[in-house]
Image 1 (cartoon, rainbow, N blue to C red):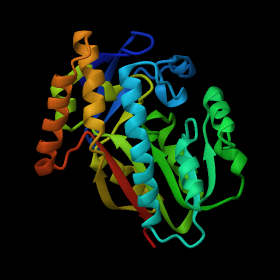
Image 2: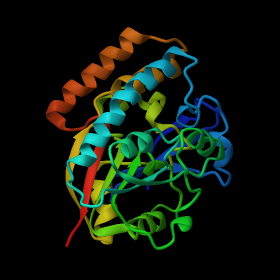
Image 3: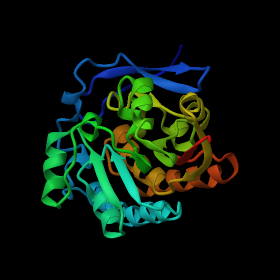
Image 4: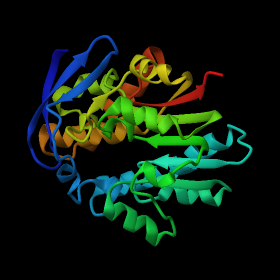
Length: 276
């Protein structure tokens, strides 16, 4: 693998890491992969585990999250699942599962972080700490919302996750896209690199190649339009040390406009189905 760029963990440890390009699969790999990943999540700044509303960025994140949750469940409802069984992996504090449950889905969730599980429990959502606790269950829909990039032992974990999918099931995966305009503009300051919590950095080609051996075919990809704005806001802070909202808004907008032609948005939702 060829060196791609050097960046650092701006939000927790300030340690430096290298991204290496796996050209065959067109994805980036974080190097080195820390042996103890848990300590890089031990921060109030890691918002998906805290529900924080302390800063302006936190508040904007929560506002967008509320809107996005409804859009995500609408996407699920479009699959016309008969039993409406759902497994959400990396469920965080359980907000997505709350909304899905309120729309008639039979839900299960996995979240390894103890604090996040505790916050989910306060909302009436019981989350498992690992997949093994689900035993022999299967699901019509499995979702990973900005989770795949966090998983060590990637290919084994993909194999394990796919084993819980029904024969005619659908998998929904949302991940950042390192080929987007905002990624190229911010370079090593791009917040969605988020090393070392993000171990992998995907393109459409890499998603197709990773899941094809497991019998899954990519049938559609959708943009996550808000991500370019949120990521640009964080990236500006990393780059300049200031909250440059107007500049961040412009870069986020420019990224989306350019992606109208290139189809390389800041983040994508990939919809995969079993090739039966």
